[in-house]
Image 1 (tube, rainbow, N blue to C red):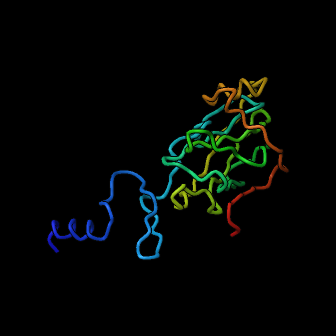
Image 2 (cartoon, rainbow, N blue to C red):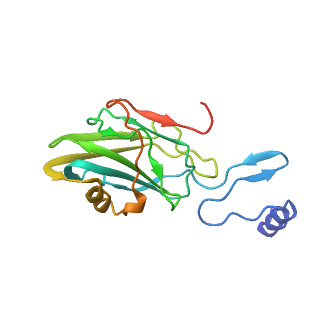
Image 3 (cartoon, one colour):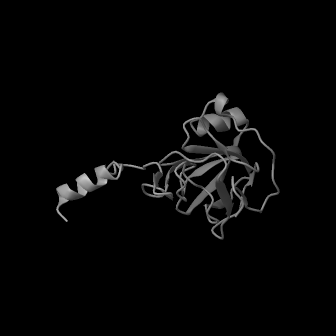
Length: 178
């Protein structure tokens, strides 16, 4: 098919050609087609392989596209200990960043599997790629949640106060049951 004919055909069907980045899902004759690439972790705090002071830490996971607030999953990894964290991460106002309050004992290596049980999903319905975050704690100490927020590059208005969960177990949440 000639490229110009393809553009005319796409326009006649009511579809716009794909633009750079993630595209919203489109309704095509009763079928919803999620557009764009699956979400991927763009950055984290702590960065993978980093060392941070023991005590309070805000784990920050930034995705490359807007995410669904109630579709997330994190759990233990064989690459390190699982930190004691709140039960639920909080999606921040930018729609791409999750924050999770944890406490770390000193001089340990930690690892979390992000989306090992696929639940992190974009607002367009695409499931995120799995990711393992590994980091270590030092013998330094973060004395307060406020200090932990500052280390993660967040502000007091981003403070994620939620319910603690049992250490050593992964948790997941979805707007729809598996």
